[in-house]
Every structure is written in structure tokens, then in C-alpha cells.
Image (cartoon, rainbow, N blue to C red; front, side):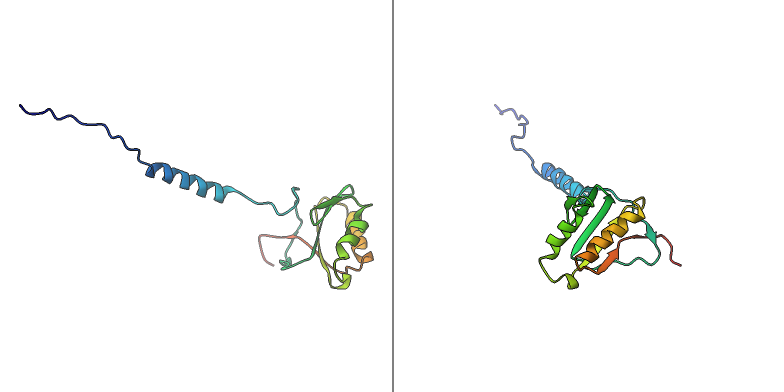
Length: 138
């Protein structure tokens, strides 16, 4: 008498497809994730044909409105701006500090001048205005 041959079901679990799917998901989320450098505000920068990248600036000032100004991620208003800049500039020699000023293109000209005045009153004369490059070159 011959024993019957039966197919036995596989009792092991193949983890290779699961690992492949997980790696693809990790890569997908790494590629699609963006990191914001600005303190969570969206600006539409004005364009300039002569704009250049600033390699290193110590103080970053983002002016949205009179009530919303950021100095290195610290939110303040126009009235409190000189005190925040003074605190920030007290860490070193103000004459060697540099600043980058960013403003929405719909921000008032008076706001930009007021921010520049606050920087200059605290001894920071090296101020760059941040713009975005246009598509074409002259």
C-alpha cells in the first residue's frame, strides 16, 4: 500500500514583500516632505534680476505687517522691534553683525523703512533685502 501524497500548505510567512513596501513608503515620505525655514508664514517675494544668494547672515528679519514682524523666529510688532533687535545684537559687536530683511511685496514702504531704522539705531548697518530671482536674465 502506497501512502497518499498531499500538498501541504506553506506555514512560513514571507516578509520580503512587506519590507519592500515599507521601504518604498519611507522613501516616498522622505521625498515629499518639505521643511519650512521661515517661521510658518507664506511670503510672496518681489522679483529682481540682480538678486544674489546671501551665504550667511546673523539676524533674519521678516516683516509681514506692523503687527507681525519676526526676528530669528521671535514674533514681535513694530513697537517691540527695537527691544528684540537690541537683545539679539547684545551677543556680539553690532558693527560686525549682518541682517537680512524679508518683506511681502504687498508690505508698505513705510514698514520697511521703519524696520531699517530700528536696525540702524542698534548699530546694524549691513542689511540685505531678500528677493526671488526672475525667470530670465537681462
